[in-house]
Picture 1 (cartoon, rainbow, N blue to C red):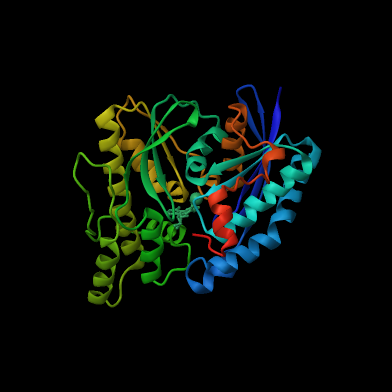
Picture 2: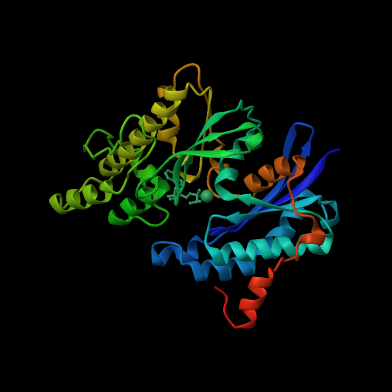
Length: 346
Ligand code: KG4
Ligand code: ZN
């Protein structure tokens, strides 16, 4: 029996909803609507959590309603709602989770809670990717840079390595800021880099030990600051191309080491930075022939509701959800009850 899952994403600065239909193995995206908040945050040079929550509150229901309109469906055609519940900005997550919870309660349908990072990787399903497990997953977003061993059915994400300091997207954003470019920095740097020479400046590549899958990007900020102090009139396209090259190079080299160590036959790369063209090209060139590369199309790399709906549909089929009748059941132990009575919550 085919079923429809509504996905809701509100973990950072995008309110996004989408409906997918899963029919046997065939996943179809029926509609997606995203309300962006860039104009709210741009003057602050980054996301302001309180402003983000307020904007999500305004946008959530209109976004859900117009997603259903786009999909040609009504509320009663939904079989389940999937929502990002971690990781992310707590206020923003709460808007999405409580909105989804109320919809499920009102409609009498199950709720599926989704890990945002896992959904980024599962976004390759939207392009019909066939992945064999275990596979290697590389998450490169504004807040995370991590490698995972992913087990069958998109269940079990075993961490292999993380960034020791800044995430790859954060490095793009901070570097862009130093160069006077607007937020988010990644796409701006990529645009200018297209006209520059990637070999113009030799920015450092931090490559923690061969047998480790960790990353490190914080040294790049210092390198750019120093370069700007020493070069009063920098050629921005060359700086951007060289800066982008340093990030891409480190990502490709560490990922390649992990592929070769375990001879992974499938590599999934996802998250906002996976939209970067230079990275996509260099990964394709670098991978050994036994490893297939899966990267979502660029619109599914940055935060979107479709990836939440896609992983939601997989989880729903695996019978992993919360029944509507249990949505507001909260178990309170006698010890907690006693503490609450004394006015203590810890
Ligand atoms: O996954 P995402 O949309 O949000 C998070 O969950 O963090 O990733 C956002 C990050 C930002 O740091 C942005 O600068 C970066 O992805 N980004 C890019 C590109 N598009 C977005 N970085 C490099 N090249 C791009 N084309
Ligand atoms: Zn994300």
